[in-house]
Image (cartoon, rainbow, N blue to C red; front, side, top):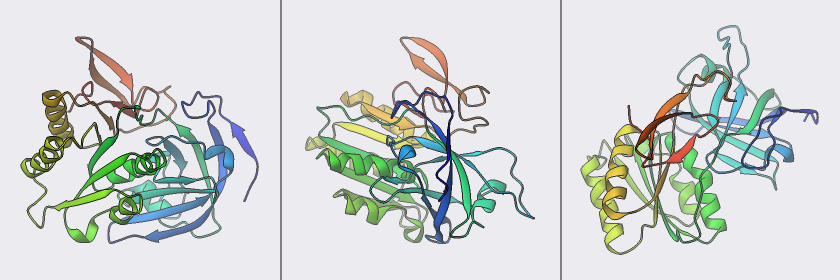
Amino acid sequence: MANSDTYAGVSSPANGKVFEVETRVKSNTEVNGEYRLLILDAPQRVLDCQPGQFFHLLCPSTLENAPYLRRPMSIYGYYPEKGELHFLYKVTGEGTRALAELLPGDALNVLGPLGKGFSIAKDWRHLLLVARGVGLATLAPLAQEARRRGRKLTAICSARSPEVLMSVDLFRGMGAEVITVTDAEGSSGMENIEAIIQGRIDVGEVDALYTCGSNRMLRLLQKIGAEHGIPGEIALEQQMACGLGMCQCCVRSFRRNDQIVHERVCREGPVFDMQEAMAW
């Protein structure tokens, strides 16, 4: 494990510092037919993270894949006691194909932690997480933090089929009540998810809503939150070039104080107030 690192000079909400470090691959294994879990041996200084933050990964160049830009990747888990940093990813393009070729002992340069993470207010006792596919990876550290703070957690996990459901065991291991919905079983429609959430609201078990990515999910949770006065946060997914706020590649529009404002997902986010986010 290389112990040299570089302070990148970028402000981070978690610890005030962002580092560029050389990590070592501990394992890089298939989780199912679509997703892989990458576990890195990382120095303590980069493991002072917030749920919802991300790292910028310098994907390796191979004979078949030569990604030019770094790839932003949400943190799936950070474990200072073990010196581990976890990422869950789906192989979809040149960068992730190159990541999939990493073997134990290989070096991987990472930059982070970056961005603004999730928050949990003192009076939010019952948290409800809802996401689909790899979006659940972004919410996994939030479950870890909820358990640490003694909050009750419900996780609605959505996928195409039961075989590709993600993070179910992880959420259950964090003490969450897990509800699975899938396309194959006909249970993942927005109407059914709304009914499930409404049932939890009716018994007073939703103080805050959290999600990641999906436009359909965002619209649904905005509607539910507005109707019942329930706050919420969303981690937005966006293409990024620099990950530091300089290139303006990830700018999105938000509604705030009756105005439309534009902010960088990598710097002012990736976590935003759910009611302020605008779906495409």
